[in-house]
Image (cartoon, rainbow over all chains, first blue to last red):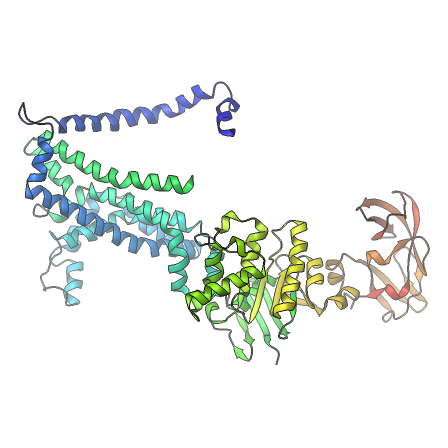
Length: 286
Length: 341
């Protein structure tokens, strides 16, 4: 068993050194993540009145049509946002990986540049672009897809457009990481064997990019299901999403226990996706 | 017109001229090697034939039709890559079936049948359900070969297919390639930097240098009479001696005079002597020199001998022996001498 020999081979002080190196990260993780999350879990099971079941807060969520609609909207929008970013991000990542360096890096820079600005600033930009008289609405009415004074502000379409732009870099970068490991010879071989450009993309590049697309999708889905600023500003009060509803609950009605219950459900939804994925990739690599 | 006609192909990468006007005619069913050092343009030329690069000038004509502007998928050629380029997400059988599937000419059952036949031809049918990464290098290589021949391509292009194999496997594969060529009769173009491989496999060797054809001749002819100093050096590392041809004979750099028939006109010339045509001791013609080094190579011994300003290499049997520093005579017969043109 070569694995069991490893720690001894690294020398006697290695264990202490490892603790030292992992210390700051571990402290941050425990103090700033695990502790607050634990607190939320505890809060979520504290019933509003003494004597009620610990599931009261959760039951309230599932019994109220309003919260279920918010949850369904959040989930549905996140799925759409994930699909759209994948459909834009995959070809973009492919082009970045396969064009000459200068072109590829310029494209990549343009994709990543928005990450350097505040999400609030970007979202206000979208409010202007999507609003009445803004360029996006104008284009749509020009194409005959909307009334002259149409607006995408306070619509789900508007939320999707703004969110896709915010999250595209995550999908592109994750997929790019995988595509750049695909040897160009594979595509060339496919071409010489009679598959045209698009069929090569479909039968060779796409299947080999799946790991990148899956981890990119998980990242984008997790970020969009819990996103707060963009859906709130673009969607407004008429289209609340879960993060917004939690915020309302915690700041306006000061119902921390119910807010905690919703947060727990959101966390469970993300973990429900992540854990099977991790198990799947472990099996593939193992 | 030949089966495959390349006329005046040029290719530039930025300011680098990779190919400077290559013209070649290749007959149907022949086995041609493109031989040369790295950077000579041999792989670029192969990629132009495959359609993976577009030439800046010239034309590629296959079987009477101009394919210069056709994309690779429309050319009905097969190319085998140095990296084998097996698709890692498919089984061996699906890899071999891939070209049939993409060309969609027959039913799935028929495609599978043909893929099995091609695998049987390279003796790998028992691994049909494996994944490429479970195979050894040699096995992957045979899968790539099976995939290249499964659909009767018009031309089989091989890009240094043996260079990733160890010596023993490479010999086996050479024999297998030749055998396959005889059985299937595919027009084959083989790119290599290994002169021995080129000579042993192909009917014809096209020696390339700096984007141009240096020499284009049948394998035995190019070996016996390399013609240029570069060819002499590249094909079997022959000795090239700068000599002065005078009315009375051929003068070496050490002042020795030799009488060699068919010498070119008077003046400076290059004399080509193959290492294995020389031996230690007196011959019909003899060179005087000093042994500089002795390299033991198993069945043979190579001596490096200084003759005047020139250093020559002599490949002899083991029973001839001399030590570094010894004054010796190197003999050869005049009919083995060649002249560079």
